[in-house]
Image (cartoon, rainbow, N blue to C red):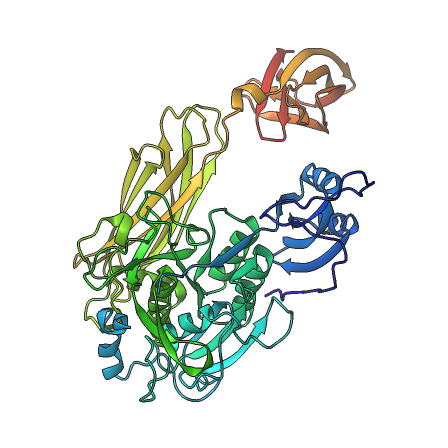
Length: 589
């Protein structure tokens, strides 16, 4: 597992962030304006290039393999040049997210956490480092001197000031931490977990704002420390590739990520980032009447609902107070996840269990997702456990036809060994129409495969598609998961390379029959890749071949192919571009 490298130096150049551009006085000669950017690289060469052209590098995040994200101060010219490199995955101005809260915990009873406590389910024990779940509050820090939090608090890291002191100077993270993991000590409040190991990644400043790079660093730290759950009661309206990289990294490394859906009101598709990302559980907020909170964001990304109105929890300085928001709902789910992972569940298994045991409170799926989180039900030891979706992926397949084709990779399991069926559905997210389905019979305790699903007659307009998998056992228990992919722009016809000329001459020398091809090729997109000449017999078997690497928009050359076999029949020329599109032609010999 790669560790995070963080370099902090004082940035002397004035930085203008996503909230606006700075202006300089008129009538003065000014240097080219610079901004703080995140640069996602895919190779050591790109990493070096991004470092070399930066005015200042403040942070480097190492993902898996050669992929990294470099945060630094760049001129627009430097960013334009980096954008032209194929091994630079993205550049983005380093924007900010903010704490989701600010409208002012009956919730513990409502999600049946008290029932779990009565069954001695606490999320951990009282011995630091030995057993128990590890819950990371990725927020404004935690008041670790608070009487309800100090026993459970283990450590933290401050990514705002770059030190190991994650003391909260805003109050938001402390309130979130109390709902997730306040100790049962006959004072103050009680959390969903009461003895889980509590950690703090301080990524929001005293005003409740945090840069994308610092938030990503906090998420990555949570994963690299081996924590079980990461709570993200923060967000914004813009997506960040840097934060998405961090969420993917953490989820792949076993972290259950839970995020507040946002306080944008009940308008459709109002869920904020990073809750939008498929690696993250998006949580909406409900009130005491089990209605959707008037401020809660809603949309198809909502996975679970939890109490979020007038939630009583810990505050700075050792007190308690009420707050409202999806920020307050999210730690109910994070605490429930910690309870499950303390019982041996993986992050994916815990996610499935939370969905399968959620309580349907009569709201729409865009408001409640799978339902209101129920801690006691999630922890119940059912005699017939539900099957589990262990992995699900959706990958576009490049084809020469007009259809959008996807490979759905899946793996399912069931501890009872009574798997029965896997049902797949491909949906066009633009219009909600079902494009394709598949049903596969499975058995025993595990199964995996890759299934091709097709959106026929797609117009190539980069639609987003979602694959849903439902796995069912012989007793009728089921689990589900979804994966989403955006189709690449369909440029197959326009980008196919062209054979401009192709001629063949032959001769025989000794026992060898030789054919020489002269050719010229072109491509409107300028991404020629290879030209291959093949000598075929009458059954279309390849007797000999030779290839040339080409590039740009035009290329020409010649190849010689030969054989001792006198049954030579055809010479075939094939030109291929970098996208895999190809054109072939043949000549009889």
